[in-house]
Amino acid sequence: MTATITAFESSPDRGQGLARDMRVRWALEEVGKPYEVRLLSFKAMKQPAHLALNPFGQIPTFEEDGLALFESGAIVLHIAEQHPSLLPDDAKGRMRAIMWMFSALATVEPPIVERSAAYLMEREKPWYAERLPMLDDRIRVRLTELSRHLGDSEWLDGAFSAGDLMMIHALRRLESSGLLKEFPDLEAYIARGQARPAYQRAFAAQLQVFAAATAGG
Amino acid sequence: MTATITAFESSPDRGQGLARDMRVRWALEEVGKPYEVRLLSFKAMKQPAHLALNPFGQIPTFEEDGLALFESGAIVLHIAEQHPSLLPDDAKGRMRAIMWMFSALATVEPPIVERSAAYLMEREKPWYAERLPMLDDRIRVRLTELSRHLGDSEWLDGAFSAGDLMMIHALRRLESSGLLKEFPDLEAYIARGQARPAYQRAFAAQLQVFAAATAGG
Image: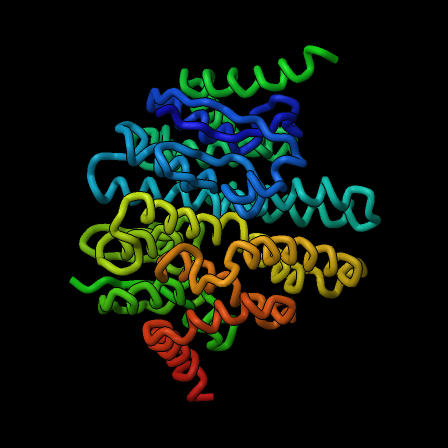
């Protein structure tokens, strides 16, 4: 049985690969697992059929052989546990790679998402100009710490892992902010991830959705 | 070898059990694993010895037998994997419980943390009165979805799991907001978690740190 994931029918990022299905696609490509995609409109995401898969009405979801999951972190972890290559074989290295997945989602990504949320919901508000630098400074703290940890290493902890996959994708959402230019080592880290053939296949697949949706218009 | 965790020497919550070491203590108590606590000042958390354990300079950390972890989600998952009772035995149920851990950290908690961050950093700003209801509404969306999922169930998915542990602790940070009063089913869910003997032992242990720190003053 082929796995099925869900993704935006019309991604708000216009094919830049910033939506969270990209993480799942990337992981599936890293392990060489074929998959099908069910595209959802924003309306369909909030209707009962999808809410039964994800009570928070978000993409991506993952379905295979009677298992239904939501949360990109959980889906990527499931894929990584079922196939070699995204988690180290030794128990301690495996747990540290999972730790970096949690770190990407719970420590690094939230202030980045907050910056996007402010742009979406508050950019016409009189306080936006004063608040944006506060948000940027919160992000800078995390980027400085992450950069210091990375040092001269290629990846976060030994070989490329699901932790790098999640971290690199979370960082990509800063591309339009200009903040990454202050951290050339993190830009290089992101670029190493993007250079992986699996990343490029995943990116092309999600871009195709956008291209197909706009071909008619 | 006994596991060692880190916690605040002086918790900003004055012993309410809202800091993230509480999650780790609770998980350790659920599985009956003894542990030692190393208390850290805010200054010590940002110094090299602790940054070597957690590059983001936060608590809690976990050390045992050559494994060092940070991120409360990763630590609780590690504890749950090493001992029975916090994850279902069947593979699919296990993965769904882990999914709820990610959901607590990546979907439910961030807007709650954001509300706390706004109180800390923006409550003197002229926009706080207008922005607070926006933050509350974002949280209400998640609480409504979570409440709808929970329905008449005792826990998120079958028996109590590490997913409930993480979710209940994340929700507790809303206690002072008044928002939980709009969701009596979620209040009852939190209360079921707090009624567990393991929760109570963990809460008493972290409260003792606060009581000891203030006994001299």
